[in-house]
Amino acid sequence: QVQLVESGGGLVQPGGSRRLSCAASGSIFSITAMGWYRQAPGKQHKLVAVISSGGDTNYADSVKGRFTISRDNAKNTVYLQMNSLKPEDTDVYYCNAEGLSSGSRWFDSWGQGTQVTVSS
Image (tube, rainbow, N blue to C red; front, side):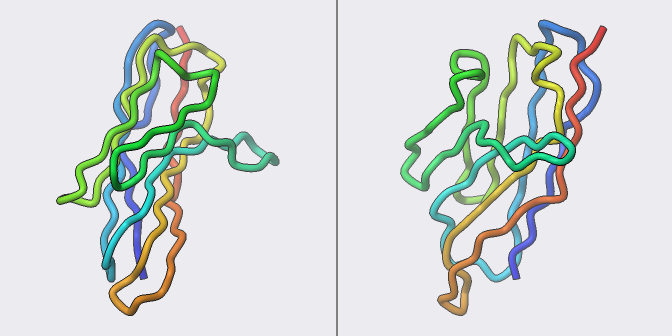
């Protein structure tokens, strides 16, 4: 099993910044991609940003130029630096990781979610 633990959510004022972190642990052989998604109540996950093991990134149009995803492969950790936050960025943010476990099985794991609220 692979577990993901997120941190960094909270209340931030419009225009402010926040950094989310997500650490993966467990029976990990390799992680292919790590990413951040957001989900409003009753709706599906929506991509925010994703990063491959080689550092290739992809962002939702709504966050391009404001958010930066990065990862530390040695620590199996992914970060999301969020700048110039807007009220519409308010949501629960979920970390995702997919790759191969130590038993050579594919995994696709999700964190428990962390609330980000942008409000004055």
